[in-house]
Length: 125
Image 1: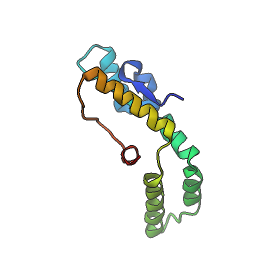
Image 2: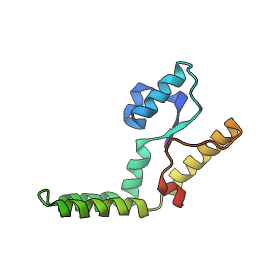
Image 3: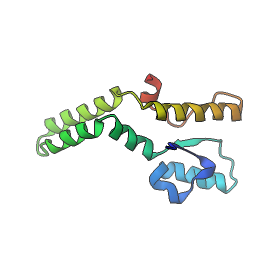
Image 4: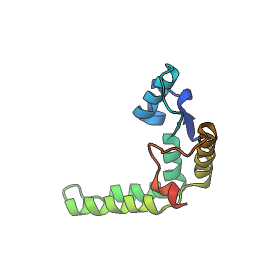
């Protein structure tokens, strides 16, 4: 599975895969504007993470039992989902692909560069 798309590989047609910001960065890159090199982690990475770690069932169970008229229940279920996602290690294949692409980015720029988004889940692993 390919969980990464480089800016020069994406455009408006991939908005569902890389989000609006990623698609716009792709469009700007393809137009030849001065955009620093970079990549996006695709929505497929998130979907596989949720599905393959068993979080999907936990989330579905929490949502199926939520009491919509009970703010405390909504807060409790939201906290359960959030903490479950944050405490679940990222899948090795996703982490490896991100790490590999980040190393390519470092090699390309010859320096460590700040990222627009770095997930806590990746940093914990």
